[in-house]
Length: 123
Image (cartoon, rainbow, N blue to C red; front, side):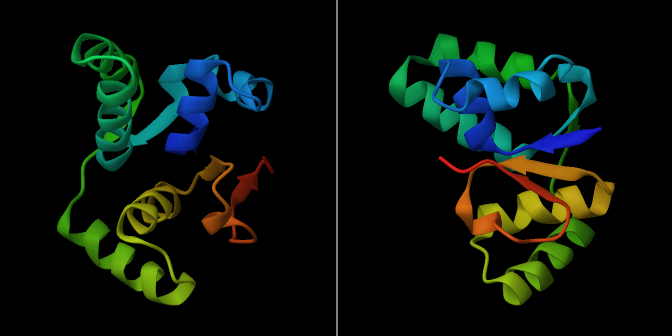
Protein backbone atom coordinates (compact mmCIF):
# COMPACT_ATOMS: atom_id res chain seq x y z
CA UNK A 1 0.00 0.00 0.00
CA UNK A 2 1.04 3.60 -0.70
CA UNK A 3 -0.56 7.03 -0.63
CA UNK A 4 -0.38 9.10 -3.81
CA UNK A 5 -0.80 12.82 -3.21
CA UNK A 6 -3.26 14.89 -5.25
CA UNK A 7 -0.50 16.21 -7.51
CA UNK A 8 0.43 12.64 -8.44
CA UNK A 9 -3.14 11.77 -9.38
CA UNK A 10 -3.34 14.90 -11.54
CA UNK A 11 -0.01 14.17 -13.24
CA UNK A 12 -1.17 10.64 -14.02
CA UNK A 13 -4.68 11.63 -15.12
CA UNK A 14 -3.44 14.40 -17.44
CA UNK A 15 -0.36 12.57 -18.73
CA UNK A 16 1.68 15.40 -17.25
CA UNK A 17 5.43 15.82 -17.28
CA UNK A 18 5.81 13.43 -14.31
CA UNK A 19 3.19 10.91 -15.44
CA UNK A 20 5.82 8.21 -16.05
CA UNK A 21 7.13 8.62 -12.50
CA UNK A 22 3.65 7.95 -11.10
CA UNK A 23 2.60 5.31 -13.62
CA UNK A 24 4.00 2.32 -11.72
CA UNK A 25 2.26 3.44 -8.52
CA UNK A 26 -1.07 3.99 -10.27
CA UNK A 27 -1.24 0.63 -12.03
CA UNK A 28 -2.97 -0.97 -9.05
CA UNK A 29 -5.40 1.63 -7.76
CA UNK A 30 -6.65 -0.92 -5.22
CA UNK A 31 -3.32 -0.60 -3.39
CA UNK A 32 -3.56 3.18 -2.97
CA UNK A 33 -4.62 4.86 0.26
CA UNK A 34 -6.96 7.76 -0.56
CA UNK A 35 -7.66 10.36 2.13
CA UNK A 36 -11.03 12.04 1.68
CA UNK A 37 -9.10 15.33 1.47
CA UNK A 38 -7.44 14.04 -1.71
CA UNK A 39 -10.90 13.21 -3.05
CA UNK A 40 -11.96 16.78 -2.23
CA UNK A 41 -8.97 18.27 -4.03
CA UNK A 42 -9.39 16.02 -7.07
CA UNK A 43 -13.11 16.72 -7.33
CA UNK A 44 -12.52 20.47 -7.06
CA UNK A 45 -9.76 20.32 -9.70
CA UNK A 46 -11.66 18.10 -12.16
CA UNK A 47 -14.85 20.15 -11.80
CA UNK A 48 -12.89 23.29 -12.63
CA UNK A 49 -10.79 22.01 -15.55
CA UNK A 50 -13.28 19.51 -16.97
CA UNK A 51 -16.85 19.23 -15.70
CA UNK A 52 -18.80 17.65 -12.85
CA UNK A 53 -19.45 14.44 -14.79
CA UNK A 54 -15.72 13.92 -15.36
CA UNK A 55 -15.04 14.88 -11.75
CA UNK A 56 -17.38 12.14 -10.57
CA UNK A 57 -15.53 9.64 -12.79
CA UNK A 58 -12.26 10.63 -11.10
CA UNK A 59 -13.85 10.13 -7.69
CA UNK A 60 -15.20 6.73 -8.77
CA UNK A 61 -11.63 5.78 -9.67
CA UNK A 62 -10.38 6.83 -6.23
CA UNK A 63 -13.11 4.72 -4.64
CA UNK A 64 -11.30 1.64 -5.97
CA UNK A 65 -8.54 2.40 -3.46
CA UNK A 66 -8.76 2.34 0.32
CA UNK A 67 -10.57 5.57 1.20
CA UNK A 68 -9.69 6.95 4.63
CA UNK A 69 -12.09 9.49 6.17
CA UNK A 70 -10.95 12.25 8.49
CA UNK A 71 -11.54 11.12 12.08
CA UNK A 72 -10.89 12.85 15.38
CA UNK A 73 -7.68 10.90 16.01
CA UNK A 74 -6.45 11.62 12.48
CA UNK A 75 -7.32 15.31 12.97
CA UNK A 76 -5.23 15.45 16.13
CA UNK A 77 -2.28 13.74 14.45
CA UNK A 78 -2.66 16.18 11.54
CA UNK A 79 -2.51 19.10 13.95
CA UNK A 80 0.65 17.77 15.55
CA UNK A 81 2.33 17.16 12.19
CA UNK A 82 1.21 20.56 10.86
CA UNK A 83 3.00 22.24 13.74
CA UNK A 84 6.07 20.03 13.57
CA UNK A 85 6.59 20.32 9.80
CA UNK A 86 4.83 23.64 9.04
CA UNK A 87 2.21 21.98 6.82
CA UNK A 88 -1.06 23.45 5.55
CA UNK A 89 -4.38 21.95 6.60
CA UNK A 90 -4.76 19.65 3.58
CA UNK A 91 -1.08 18.67 3.46
CA UNK A 92 -1.13 17.82 7.16
CA UNK A 93 -4.16 15.56 6.71
CA UNK A 94 -2.57 13.80 3.75
CA UNK A 95 0.76 13.33 5.54
CA UNK A 96 -0.92 12.22 8.77
CA UNK A 97 -2.97 9.67 6.86
CA UNK A 98 0.18 8.20 5.32
CA UNK A 99 1.87 8.10 8.72
CA UNK A 100 -1.17 6.59 10.42
CA UNK A 101 -1.49 3.90 7.73
CA UNK A 102 2.30 3.34 7.85
CA UNK A 103 2.76 3.81 4.10
CA UNK A 104 4.99 5.96 1.93
CA UNK A 105 3.61 9.21 0.54
CA UNK A 106 4.31 9.59 -3.18
CA UNK A 107 4.34 13.25 -4.25
CA UNK A 108 5.88 16.08 -6.21
CA UNK A 109 4.62 18.71 -3.76
CA UNK A 110 7.70 20.38 -2.31
CA UNK A 111 5.93 20.94 1.03
CA UNK A 112 6.73 17.27 1.69
CA UNK A 113 10.36 17.43 0.57
CA UNK A 114 12.71 15.74 3.06
CA UNK A 115 9.95 14.46 5.35
CA UNK A 116 10.20 10.87 6.59
CA UNK A 117 8.58 8.16 4.43
CA UNK A 118 8.10 10.45 1.42
CA UNK A 119 9.03 9.60 -2.16
CA UNK A 120 9.46 12.97 -3.86
CA UNK A 121 9.60 13.65 -7.60
CA UNK A 122 10.99 17.05 -8.54
CA UNK A 123 9.11 18.97 -11.23
